[in-house]
Image 1 (cartoon, one colour):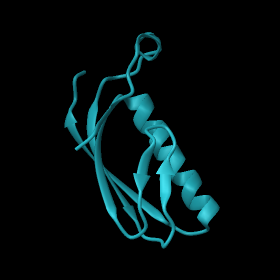
Image 2 (image 1 turned 180 degrees about the vertical axis):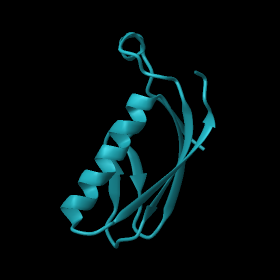
Image 3 (image 1 turned 90 degrees about the vertical axis):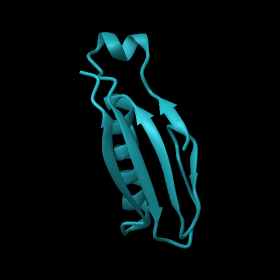
Image 4 (image 1 turned 180 degrees about the horizontal axis):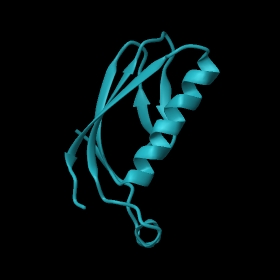
Length: 88
């Protein structure tokens, strides 16, 4: 499972927490998509799993998926997340 570490010194200073989450993207459409922050391909009709580290990165991914769904006009991609490691 690929891992995207969205933490860096600047986000740390701004209060970003290095929480690790396992994400599952399920593409329910006939169109391929790419999640822009992580450059993760989400092929049509398939499920993709990845790990993301950092609250700010997760929030951005969540926002990107919401934008993709809004542009598609329906819930083309579902996103589920499970906290694996809360390093607070």
